[in-house]
Amino acid sequence: MERHKISEHEAFLLLTKMSSKTNTKLREVAEEFVSTGALPGTVTD
Image (cartoon, rainbow, N blue to C red):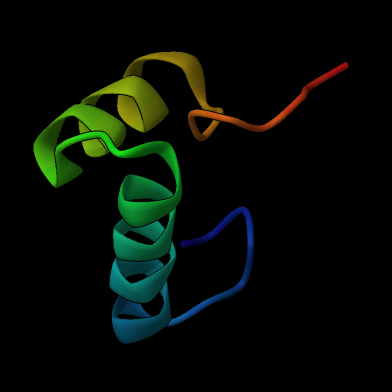
């Protein structure tokens, strides 16, 4: 939330959107984000 300057609600919406887009469980999306800093299905440099 700090990195993207978004609220708790907006962060949850982002995680649920990525979960739906990648057909991945929300818990797994959150775990990947915490461990890598990147959301599944996004490209990082």
